[in-house]
Length: 407
Image 1 (cartoon, rainbow, N blue to C red):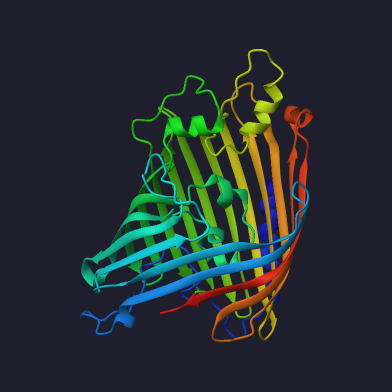
Image 2: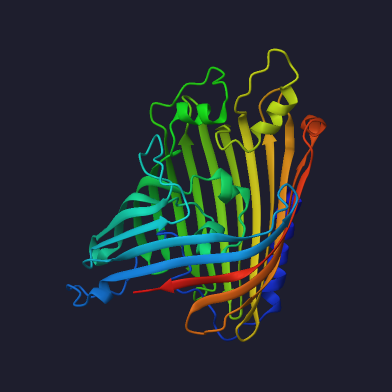
């Protein structure tokens, strides 16, 4: 894994030095899926806004593609990849809100937070203090985790790593306090629910035995994060540490280091993460371990304990001629079982990459026609390799995406 981290870092540095800054294609305020930056409309005058259009933004996020997969699912189809409706705005210079709803997600309520999984955001932000440098956000919101892969608008992120897609609790009930130290540096502390479903529901849904584990009396977590802008926003940092608890007396720890660059026609990010889960409630590595023990007469499936997950993600986008973009992304992930007598390091590896082409026909609109090829493989090592077959998937997609600022 260390070699992989070094390789990603080296590749990013090589590409960074190879392209000199040209005409800027830097991020706009539509690029971020989260509220991790200081809330919208930071340039507000300290007076009541005169027009509704100055107060409110209504956005529609859309992506649909014709996909041809091979692997476990060989059925080609036209799929609705993204469909989200968002309303956000500033009612006063001090008070803002955000609501975002997924149109293609179930509205069933989670057992712990009582919120449907279809809601990404349902929160308010209050700015206060000298020059409004303090901001408090309460409600359903994005995790303040150092991942540019997650922070990027989901309209433009075709495939996710397992870290974002399965491991993280992405949208959660929380209270987040932030402080703008300077224009370019923000610190945040976010108190949040560890998971959106409660302890018993999580075990029952998986069909697992509790193996002596008990629910935590306070299944909460805390993110501490720093967001930075350096070199005239050419280099952006998003670093975070998280401590949380799901089961009683079982504490999780996680570090995330996100770096993003914008160098004229070239932009990209490199995310590195390491998480120690006392209980594998995301259920990523546990199925492989359960398959290993299934032959035992006394076997009952359960979540692994003391699991470490590591992830490295690199994405690069390059506008090689006006309106035409090359996009590439790769990720490498490992799962290790650190418990005494466990199944060892790197017993599970997940790797994926895509390469694609995008065309932006209307310069003033965030609309693109795209095509890409995606490959993903999951491989098993150590004892679990005896009973778990390696998996792979190929996918070719062509489609259209559109981030619509309708109002």
